[in-house]
Image (cartoon, rainbow, N blue to C red; front, side, top):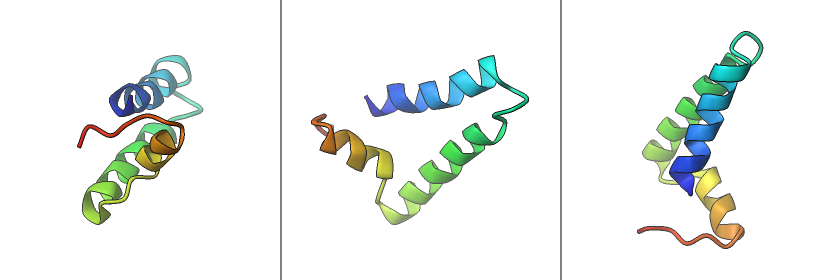
Length: 56
């Protein structure tokens, strides 16, 4: 579910609104980098709160 969410958050702004939402894929990339450094991913916390199970 996480990979699907990230791919949607990157693909939709780039394909549909490339001029107005250029910052959104950058934001996703920065958040993925921060989650790799800190070990805390806000999207995973949200997905777990919604009832999805983590693969690890």
